[in-house]
Image 1 (cartoon, rainbow, N blue to C red):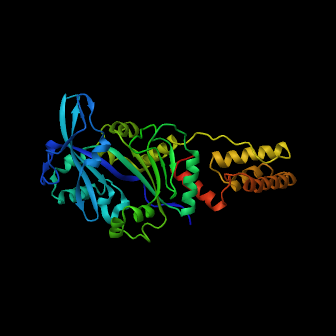
Image 2: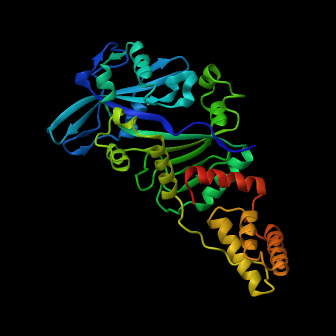
Image 3: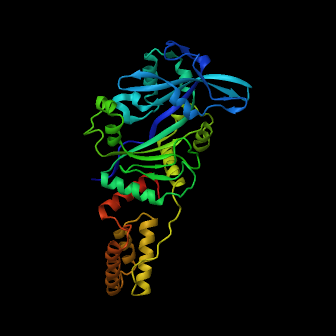
Length: 365
């Protein structure tokens, strides 16, 4: 199976914050100003924003829900508490168009869908000018399970070490991979997740995916990379936008969203990897240099064996005898490496090439 991108980078989820003065509550059973969570006061944080989501109420749709909460935050410029409606918006609201993600093209339909539930009402202008934070950016691609598991294993090996709780790479038994905890992630160490969408559909959201998509066609071999940018200030800093609101966010071009995915991954990967001393007894200095060059090219630079071999042999075009000798020594190194080294330096040619494609796709050197 050939690895390929399925869709462009898009926003998968985000948190909206609309001033309560611009909201009309229509259903007090779902939204009641008596149930208000104070995130911060003049002394600072009272309750974490991550905890608010677990305390929020829900707008129910067919096989999915959108969480909402009324919160109060201290405005240090105005020197008083301001109330907001927070909406935890995600792409399930697109239903059968779930994989499109939240975009400029569908945001009006999303707004209309929310308003049709008659829980609250606000103008479209207030909606798109609302403050945004905690965004998830996703990139979907097709890869079979063997390639995906090898990819995650390789990225896990390349991950930066960290003694801090909530930071570093974690490879799961099902093959999925995360870097850092979502709650503790920062712009310098963003949350990154590689996961199997079909597996998620079967284990966590089966009702939704069964209702709106086909598990056997829409999700077959579909994998996802997801990264988080938590703070409004981080969104403005990275994407160089003046206001962190929904309108500005959805104007960000696809290639800029992809840059953030690349950035997030590279922030969590070691810049270089040390080359282990070979356990093979080299017959000559030439064999030692072959080990050093091939190990560095494959392990650190993501190249495959036969691509490196071709580059090496190009230097011997005018000397067929030595070309044949060098080729034989390189192939001997490959055979010995596969037989001796515990962590395989060289994957099978098919998997190696597919991983290389994914590395190129997401901008990993």
